[in-house]
Length: 608
Picture 1 (spheres, rainbow, N blue to C red):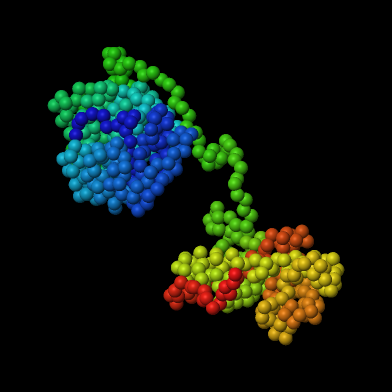
Picture 2: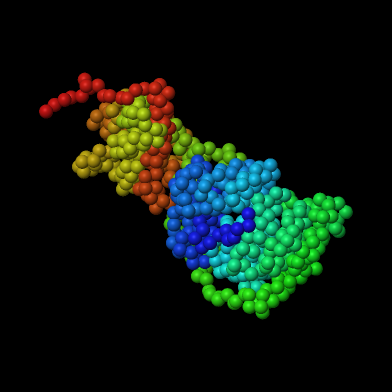
C-alpha cells in the first residue's frame, strides 16, 4: 500500500445509501475549510434517481442521486472515494462493485459485522489493484482542512475545537472511531493539530492496517510525527514493530495500545470491537506496548501519560526547527439549521400552515384532541370521526347517526346521473381511479347534488325573517332564482323520494326540534300547488335537517351555524357520500373490462 496522501481539498466522493446527517456534516466541513466545490459529488440509492437538497454553507444545492454504482461512476468520473453506508448484509457486495470501477481509488466501509470471508476478498482485490479499503466497522477518516468521511470527528463544534478546519503536522491512525474523536482533541491541545487521521475499524480483518497508514504518513512531507492508538487482540501492531526495526519509518512515532486492564479479568474479555480480545500473551496490550517501545516508538506507561508523550515529541520537533508554527485563522461560521435554531430558542419563525382538527406529533394521531386509539376503544363510528374532524367536537349519537344515514342514502343514485356518467366514461377511457373519481365529482354543483348549502342558506334566511312559504317562494321567483332543494326530474307529489321520507322520519323521532324541516315542508306544500314535480328533494331535506341538527343540539352558536353553512360543510356530506358510489362505478367498469365509450349518433341532434 504505502504511497502517500489519500485526500486533498479537491477530493470528491460518492455516497452509497443516502443518510442525510453524515452527508450534511461533510458539506458543512467543506464550507468550514473553504472548499470551492462540495466533497459529495453524487449519492447512490439503489432503485432511486433524482436529486437530494442539502446545504453548502448558506446555499442550498441539489446533489444527483443515482440508482447504480456504475451510473454514478460514469456521471462523476473525478469522484474517486466510495463511502459505503450499506448494512453489513450488502456492504461487501456493493464495496466490491465500487472497487471494480476504474474511477474508484478508496472505499470506506462503515458497517460493522461484515462477514470475514467477504472482507478478505475485498482486501485481496484492493491490494492486487492498488486500491485502499478503510474499514469495515469504521467511522472513516479526515484530511484536516480538506476532506472528511461521513461522521468522522463528530459535530462542527468538535471539529473547530480540534482545529481540524486546517492542517497540522500530526498523522494519526487508530482502530477505534470513538477514540479517534477523543485523540483529535488530545492532539490539538498539545500540538498544532492533525494533518490526516484514519480509523481503520475494529473488525478482526481491517481493509488496511495501522502500519499501512503509518508507512503512508512517512511519505507525506507535511506529516512530521505519527500518533498510533492500537488495542489488544490481533497482531496488527507487530507489522508496525517490524517496520520500525527495519528502518522504514524515519519520523517519530508515539504509540499506545489500549486494553491493559484485560489482565485483571480471570477469563478472556471482549472489548467492544470484534478484534478487541486477546488470543494469547503476544496479543495482550502489555506485550504490544513493550514491543513498540523496544522498536523505537515513544510509548508511555499509561494512557493518562499518552498526551504528555505526544507533547514532548512535538515540542522536540519544534525545537529542532522541523515544525514551524501554523498560521491560525478563524473559520467561517456554519449557518445553523432553522429547526435546530428554533429548538434552542435562538430564533422564531412563522408557521406556514395552521391546523386545528388533527395533530400527528405525539405517540399517535389525534382527531380534535381525541387519540386514535381512544376512538377505536370507545367503538366510535364514521359519523363520530366526521364530527371531530369537521365540527371539532363530539356530537351526540343521534347527530352522528344522522350523518351516517345521509352518507348511506346519498352514496349512489344509479349510473345515469351526471356524476356517475362522467366517472363511467372516464373509467372506460382507461384512466386511473383518482381521475375517474374526480371527473364525476367535478359535476357536483347547483344542478347536481350541490344544492344542500344553498337550500340550508335560503331556508334559514326565510325562516329567521318569519317569511311565509308563499312570501319566500314568490320573492325567489321575483329574483329569478329557483328554490334550492325543491324539484326533481322523476319524483312527484304522489311519488315521494324514499330517501327524503327516511330522513324526515329519523329526525321527527330523534331530533329535539325540526323547525327548519317543517318550514321546508310548508314550502313544498306551496310549490306542489304550482307543479307536481316541485317536491322537497334530498338536497332540501338534508339542508333543512342539518339546520335543525346544528341549532337543536345546543352545541353551536348562531355565528358558527352561519359559518358552517357559508363555508360549504353540507355539500361536503354529498361529496363524501357520492365518492363511495363513484368509486364503485369505477371498479365496476374496470371489472367488466368495458371498452372506450362512444356516444351513439342517434342520440345526438345534429343541426345547423
